[in-house]
Image 1: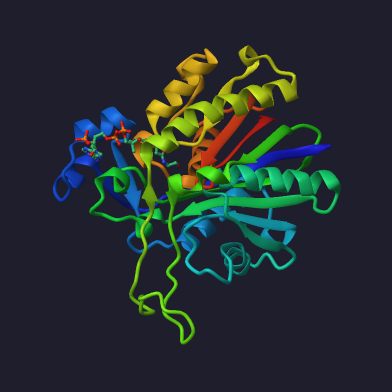
Image 2: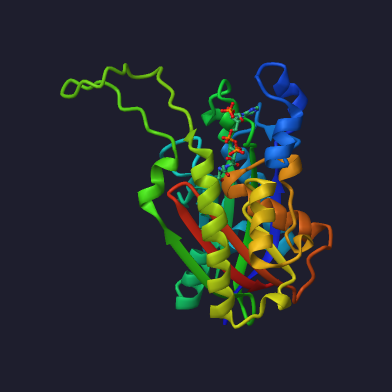
Amino acid sequence: MTTRILGTGSAIPDRVVNNQELETFLDTSDTWIQERTGIQSRHTATTETTTSLAVKACMQALEDAGKTPEEVDLILAATVSPDYTFPCLACEIQSALGAKQAAAYDINAACAGFLFALDSAAAYIQCGLYKNALIVGAEVLTKLLNWEDRSTCILFGDGAGAAFVAEEKTGVLAMMQGANGQKGMALYRQETAPDTPFRKTGIRGGAAVNYLEMSGQDVFRFAISQVPESIQQILEKTGWDKKEVDYYILHQANARIIQSIAKRLDEPEDKFPMNLTQFGNMSSASIPVLLDEMNKSGRLKRGDKIVLSGFGAGMTYGATTLVW
Ligand code: UT7
């Protein structure tokens, strides 16, 4: 027995910010953003929160799977932008849904977070501890961005994507995860450490905000070398030839990264669906939102052979093969 995705859901904030709107307050252009990233617009939270988006996506995933909250064994929430450091997002979801039986905790693996949540759920199910799990990637990254830094703020958007997974005869076939902590400072957000009576940091509690910082080229180089390698490894582990794969569903960071990976794998670009044009990089939400879109539009068919792969701050990376 293995673990299969039985239902999906997603939630995106209402407010759309297109590249032209960014031109009004940043030294940037629609042409630059589209040429370097493929992004045309992103959605940003105004009234929505990480929790409200996550809960909406989870409710849809349960509905799609025909399950009730009471039936959920485990909730795993992947996020780097929760509303609270604690309680964790997964516990907030558990409370909002009334999923009283479910164990719940968060995973911080940045943009690879949803993939790591899926792998963790699959491992729990495989070892017999749980029969099912509700997994979600949810982010309001726009609150962590420096809106005066054109090299980062143009890239990201907010959203949430969820999946209900359960024990089945087919589904997840192989998983691989990795991390390269030595490259961690390529993409980070430092926590604020205010003055205490015993340690002087020069920061007064309350007001200080630290933003996301990134060395874009380092992250780019990491992605285009590590992701193809991860995919080669997972294909070998699964025993699939790349020609058998129907879709490579990758973390949606940048169209140029995805195109470069397709080229390195010598696979046609139409096997690499993208939604970053519309939503930007939604970190842990990018893969599940794309899965939901493809599921609900009928593009994914039961039996399709899929490779999921992600990378993110950490630097974390991973790949999973599954039969839809
Ligand atoms: O989930 C993982 C999240 N992170 C990523 O995926 C990031 C991966 N990296 C990237 O996607 C790319 O490195 C970026 C899109 C961030 C940047 O593209 P690039 O081709 O690596 O550009 P660059 O950093 O080499 O900058 C080229 C020029 C610089 O100007 P000068 O020094 O050549 O005069 C930048 O200042 O482009 C300038 N620039 C911009 N110009 C207009 C940087 N951002 C902008 C901007 N608009 N938004």
